[in-house]
Image (cartoon, rainbow, N blue to C red):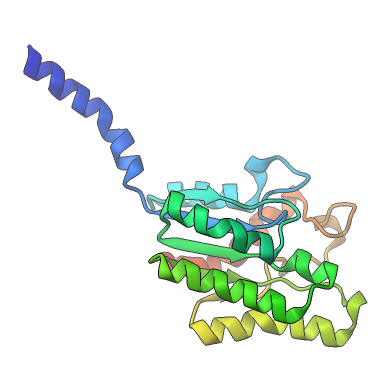
Length: 203
């Protein structure tokens, strides 16, 4: 009876053990990835987790996104997140709040660059997700800001989603009243935008 009981207990542990062995996908983002203003389960990250499960891809999705986060804040939090979750893939989707606050472009670039290097040094692959900012800070700043993502993707040879809000930002019906955050209806579009690049990375 003792051996049978032990076998039974081991079988009960299998699902938990399988879950623990799943590779982790860590998302470092801001309010656009933290589902600001809408139920979290309707955000694009939650939809991504659902899509992975439905497609039979065993990933543990860790959403470490925080509303209002900057590239400096993400860089500060990243080492601990890497140590804790040991991800095989890191999605970096930061910089929008930096741009809106007019933070120096050199600082934004260096912060994102260091996040890429830290992630790679930990053994993780990286997917970089870009964003665009309104032109109120001037055309020169806006163009140079967006160029940062393309330059980093080329320098480090990492896949790039050029604009998270592609097909969303200029559609009033898909944006909340503040004109910055997308609605729940926009989230599947955002997921598809990320998925066009992410799918190949996962394979």
